[in-house]
Amino acid sequence: MVPVKTLASAFCLLASTAAFAEDPLPRAKPEEAGFSAERLARIDSVLKADIDAGRIPGAVIAIARHGKLVKPICLARSA
Amino acid sequence: MSDTGFSISPEKAARYAKPLATDPDTGKPQARSPELTQPSKFECGGGCAASTASDYLRFASMLMNGGRFGEARLLGPRTVAYMLSDQLGPNIRNLVGNADPTRADYGFGLGLAVRTQPGVVRMMGSVGQFSWPGASGTDWWADPKEELVVVYLSAAPGPLRWHYRQKINALVYQAIAE
Image (cartoon, rainbow over all chains, first blue to last red; front, side, top):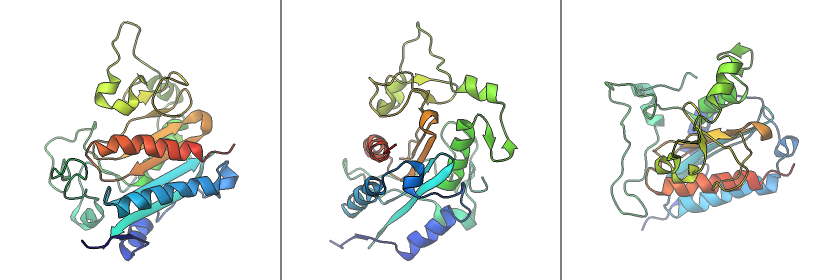
């Protein structure tokens, strides 16, 4: 079986750039928008584990609070 | 919303997400459906659009802001308030859960599920939270009380999509500290 790694591959960077080329909202740090950065990071680790396990091919997620873009994530499968 | 539409042009086709070749749970083959790089005979507003996280965040934010996005007034605030109100009267059998088990016991406005109670339903959120997920594995919701908008895009059309709707919901709300 080909090992699968989740990383910021060229595709992901490209997709990320395309998806967020023009931010839909101004950005804010998690704490500025009432989030725990540590807790928010769980989204990355959960999705990365699922991608590595071959559950989903990848994911893009955008979270906005109080009118600010808090967390854009782009994760892709990379063989 | 220049990256949203009912068809995908050839120059954007490489950005069009596709699911894993087989469903990891059932082992059945899966593919994009509908395949939006082909010309469509009917532009169905209920389930045949493609978009990006960035574009959809704009759209959902506009609804949450009562029809305004930035300087642009796109819908009247009274229209949006009516659209986001539960339209299921006491004599209507609530079958929202048949369409999406994760939205069972939500009310339904004009085009989307609307939360009418703090508990009972299977996901976290405030009364007034509204949403409607996509059959190909996408999801989004807005929670006006929290001033929160979330767009989650993954190409996972199998039963797995229900799992992720609840997972992302829990992961986002558990991260709110204040």
